[in-house]
Image (cartoon, rainbow, N blue to C red; front, side, top):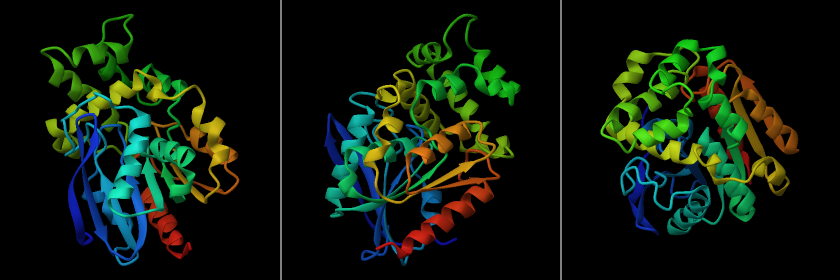
Length: 304
């Protein structure tokens, strides 16, 4: 599929020594759309641009603090959920957009929800995939043993590097500041990649596991997970009533990274939401997940 026309790209200083890489693509007169990538720390790529009709949308992408091409590389300094929410405002202001449809998957759904709660006046609609509410329960499930019920080999590989009795997240974070930092960053990211898809293709995943991807992914993501995403307990569900716009919730029925229960709980808190469970894992690359994303985004083309 052909990539949309690039309208603008650059680096935006947002304070605290951070510069965010951003791109604007598609139709300069199209409906504004802000895309929020996952991780935290994963960055955006060209594949994120393929869900949209470039004739209908003005697409805005950016690498969050410490992620992708933003600098400083893999930095966790002044890197919090609250800072990222304000960065969204700075990006929109910089490209001259007052209100946008906000799209986010996985951690991107967390950030999109926090943004909509804090700045509802800047959000026209939400398209969310692979819901992650940033809760301690979700973090414990993924990093403290929950996945071993369905994927014991992936879990065993992850914790084989952790001494018995040690907390996996705390131990990995400590190792990220040692001479073995690359090895542990690789293993941290490999664990998540091995659980992403309905039918994992680890040969393909290994080819994508370059240091420029797995180092920021591991460092930034663990920085957030260690601190429960900088959110008070139950923050998103307790404040979901502030979100009045249409919300599409797409979740893989067989998601091993983010439990489907999170999507269901969110849907129950949002009267204007649509919940679509599909035969997919966590990845937006799973065919049924991709179809659902494209369908929901197309539906919003008619939104006034």
